[in-house]
Amino acid sequence: MTATITYRDAVPADGPELAAMARRSFTDTFGTLYRQEDLALFLDQAFGSSGLPADLTDPAYRVRVATEDERIVGYCKIGPVTFPGEWSDSAMELHQLYILGEHHGAGLAPALMDWALDTMRAGGTTEVILSVFIDNHRARRLYERYGFEEIGKYTFKVGDHEDDDRLMRLEL
Image 1 (cartoon, one colour):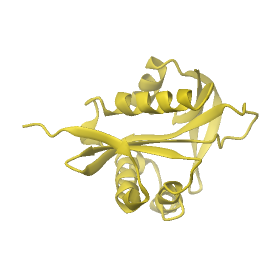
Image 2: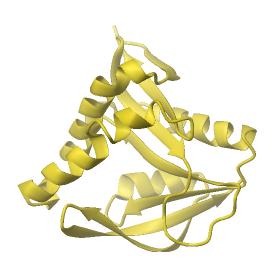
Image 3: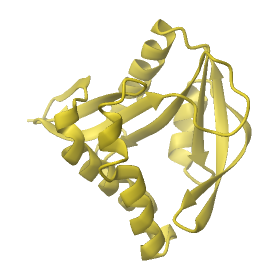
Image 4: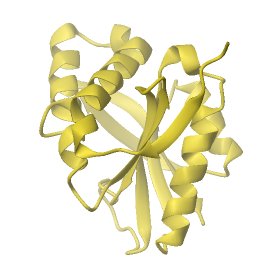
């Protein structure tokens, strides 16, 4: 029997489990690209207590989780645009869309993306901005299917390591 995936808004009590899932997803996908000290620094900044878990209590951010047997297996985080540059007041950023590897291809990413876009539209967002690692072909294909277009380069820092990311934009 296949377990059922359910979706719900994240709550502050999800912080530790959500951070652990995000750390695992990032490390499984990108961990071999970095020196251990760079990876550890990034993981602590992004998913430590002042990172993702803190965003669960910040009204500027919304996080939706996908669960299987009440265990978090994916999530999507949206909020204000944090990239340098001039962005309209009605722009929002898709900060993270992470799915554990064993759930790739099971429809979680489209379900979370649909939630993100519907939520942003309902809030008056007119454009969505995100960054994606240049060699993350799976994610780029998803974003392109939704109509995101590349608009520039972005340097994404993992510790002292600089990744070559691409900024992408979708007009709603």
